[in-house]
Structures are given as C-alpha cells and as structure tokens.
Length: 254
Image (tube, helix red, strand yellow):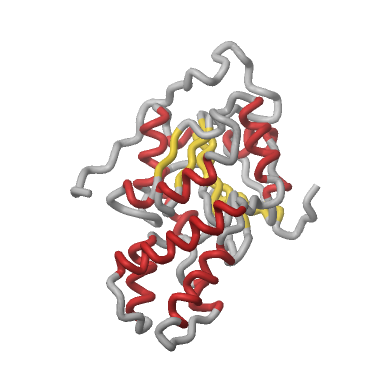
C-alpha cells in the first residue's frame, strides 16, 4: 500500500443508524460509534496465535515461550513476523504471516471463541442503534470469519491490518474507522486489550476502555480499565463517551 497522509479528525456527525431525535440518557451521552479491537478483546484468539507461533518456530528446531508470544500481542502481523524471523526462523516475514493466518483461519472455521460478555454487548449496542466498527491488525480474511458469525449490521465498518499504512500503536486504524463512519473519533468509544492498541486508540482521540485479558493494562490519563466485557454495558459505554473514567480491574463482573 502506498504511503498516504492520515485522515484528519472530522466534524462530529450523527450516523444514519442513530435516532437524531432521541435525548441522551441521564447516565451519559450516546457515542457516535464503538470501535472494537478483535484479537483478545472480542474473541479469545491469543492462545490460538501463540499455538500457531509455537508450532511454526518448533518446525525449525527452535523454542517459542509464552513470554515470546506476549511480546507480539497487539502488534501488526508483518512486524510480529519480523520478530519471529529474527528469533531464527529462516522464512521471509510475508511467508510467516501466510502460515500463521492460514492456521488461524482453520481455528476460526471450527468455532469463534467469544470473550465472556462480547456477544451480549454487541447485541445490546445494535439494539440501541449505536454503530460499531471492527479495528484490527488481523488481516481481512480473519476479520471476515468473525463478522460472518454475528447478525448482519453488527459492524458498519471493518478496518484491517493489511489495509492501513501504519498499524497500531499509530492512530491511523482508529482515525480511518472514524472517517469511514463519518464521525469525530473524539465522539467514539474504543475498546482494546493490548498496549499498542490502547496507545493507538488514545492517540486517535477516542474515549478508550482497556480490558485486561492477557497482558496488564497500565493506568493512563483518560483510560477506563475493566477486567471483563461482562463489566461493560450500554449505560457504561455512554458514561465513557461523556468523559467519565472508572477502574474496575479489582471488581467482580456483575
């Protein structure tokens, strides 16, 4: 993909899927959209990725540890593949990506491993007529396997890692999703689980929720932290959109 300038933040607009005449609930304002990370956040694919990485590295007589796998969480695929090559796997990064993606497609065709609370929250957002976008560093073939597993119209926009110039932690993926939705990123709520993803979402100006799944979610200005999507509902999404932050890492899911 050729180098291109980043989309500039747009003037806030209300997507057609939102009821223009509806008053904002007392608990907060309705976000222009909710922007979702995929791996680790909506679906529990990190164990699948680590297994695929371990198998590939082992084919070449090398060892891949859990800590090695953690170091790739949230990174663009080609960057991750470059680190696997640097680990000693004698394959070009493009071939490493092809091998890993192929293995992941096999897993997702068997079943999509939804995180607890993910499907329920997506359904609730759709019923509330709040648009959603999928913003992932996975390639489109993987994202489509997840999109195909939810009702039509759950995601209005899908931005994938093989379709951006700059991957996370750069803000381009989230800025692009907001641009395609026709909304101001600062009027959106982003939900992420990794350090690069959280950095990308915050840099875009989106109100950001960090879900602690595989890697620690460190405190940051303007960041809401939760331990599970079961702790997030439409009311709390609206409160985050209004500028409220809260920390529920030590709270049990409701």
